Image (cartoon, rainbow, N blue to C red; front, top):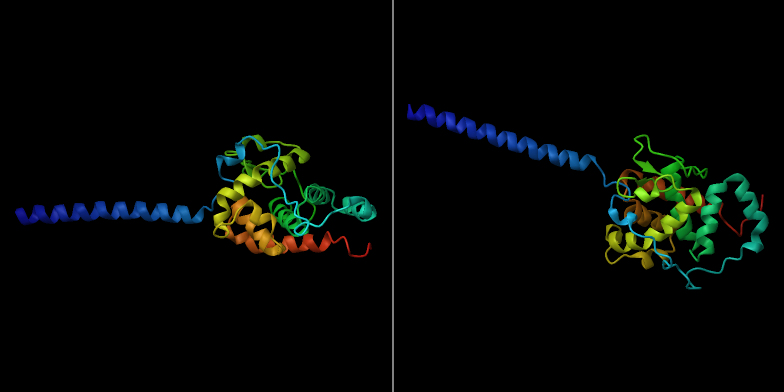
Length: 225
């Protein structure tokens, strides 16, 4: 009788251990299958800063004189209006060509399948993400239905905090100012993907390729075709 009870207890313990093991494995698999949500932080719902730090070092960001390239910019606007406006917005604020195109490259993957035809008012199929950076509306309710121009202000107003907080996902001691000083468009696109978008690694290479495409397109020195 004692032996029988002992066997029963052992079986019950094994069943409980199997159940616990199953639950642990299920949690691990679920965590692995769900990448960190884009901008999945309450940080983006913080009050926007009126004077975010921008790159104004002449060695980092050469002066950009829009009037000298009016014909070229007009042509770009006719071909890819929203991408050109994003490019103008950041270049006018002192961002380098490399960093600006890195941002655009990420937007190309978020909104237009890698095309320069950005769609700033697109929602994800689930309806949980919106806009140029596909902000998570759970964590960024202020981004919901923002018009195009206001999305750029929102992005600029949240970038500093995001990079200073999550820059380590790209590299140790990496922050907003580090991002602004990057000179490799492909690496800058990766830094934006990891630190700001915090998207699945599956799309890293696509974002880098899109950024290079934008970098080649927005070439002020190329002849106007």
